[in-house]
Length: 112
Image 1 (cartoon, rainbow, N blue to C red):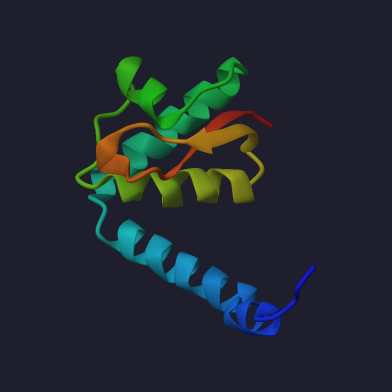
Image 2 (image 1 turned 135 degrees about the vertical axis):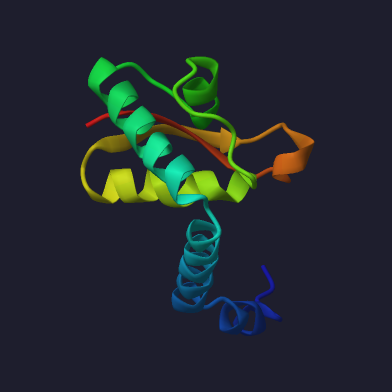
């Protein structure tokens, strides 16, 4: 097995830089969210967590708990914050099939 080029590939992978870029993107998405929508979304996540059934962002909309955000990236900070506070936990993850989501990570959550 050849390792030629391996060190170059490894040198280009910087997990800390990737995490910083992710956090910057999440902060940018959160800053651009309508505060009223963010509050409604947080309440919707709390409600679904109380129900203790698996759910995704689309379920919040289907249940009439919150409308769609202006940009789909605005979901991430809301769910991330709820998970960091121990309200929900990740159950499963896959890639979204919606073209507009650009194969983004699609997480199924459950109340923690």
